[in-house]
Length: 256
Length: 218
Image 1 (cartoon, each protein chain N blue to C red):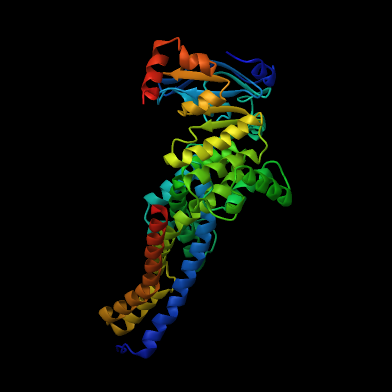
Image 2 (image 1 turned 45 degrees about the vertical axis):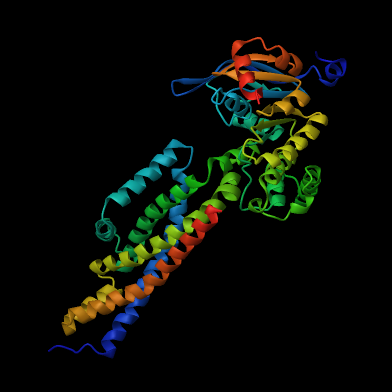
């Protein structure tokens, strides 16, 4: 049941469009006929068993992975068209990784300032102000001068989120952002993601956090063996899954 | 008439050690510049650059350094250039060091975790910025111990320059031996000088390696 407020919050503009996307690793097909439209402001959770292609799918959006067939249009730009177009896409798409991937030789503040200065040409003072703003937003302003190794996993992941936000992206991709965290740190990262969602960010999250999916997602996509098996709003997805494979998957992850 | 191996003879050999040190430093400095270029070419996404650097490395790793010295020294003569042994040795050793350091550093660049490349790419950093700000600073730390280790190899390799007539410490030893005929004493002295140069470096290399292992185990 998608409510009236949901319908009015989402705009009609399609910000990501994937058309017949196919990808192979050698002879193994990881993505099969992927068709996906994401509206501006939409919050999508992608789930599925490991090896189902969900990470590969979102990594195609900013072309960390190259899809051999099909088209991917992000913010009206064809991701595969030229390197200049790819630059434009990467400026607008932030990404958060399972392993954080902070730059270990730079302080938290430097991690957040580098891309705005080198990619957007922001002044140092402006980059620092922006960095401090987002570090405050993820509630770690006092860690700015530390190095990543001095922080907990949860703090590192929040820095990674702040680092992506410093580029003022229109879209945020999350690739299993809580999978590498100790259980007690999962909540602080999810809270940060929830607040980001509440601000209207377009988000695609690969995650197994079904509580997060239920409360935040506009749409849940279930993938298996490289294809989108089923998608739907959280309430129908959880209460009335259509496909056998979806039911099996949900049975396995929700049974405890 | 044979000379005795005395203080003067010892000092003659010791003084020649400065040419060993200087030749090593020149080859090392040249090798740093050349090696960086080779390493960057080797990891370049452009096939032509990577293949060229790969060929360069193969040639210099697959032939003896002595042949490389001969080819530069005699090759220059054939081409009508009159290279003195100094310059020939410096050029050959620089090329050789470039190839070996290039291959060492290629490995170090590729040892920087994939996630670092991806994170920088996802932030929109271009290849030169990505290399300069993200990859090379991290590769540098990994590269330090094997690079110092290679410097030790390089210092010992300069002894081959004696064969094309460059008077560094080994050649000085030959000269003194011809006059004194005390080979064990003379070459023992020469070996001790190499050891005195190399041992502290080996020691530093080992300590760096241990510190790096401790840091990456954290």
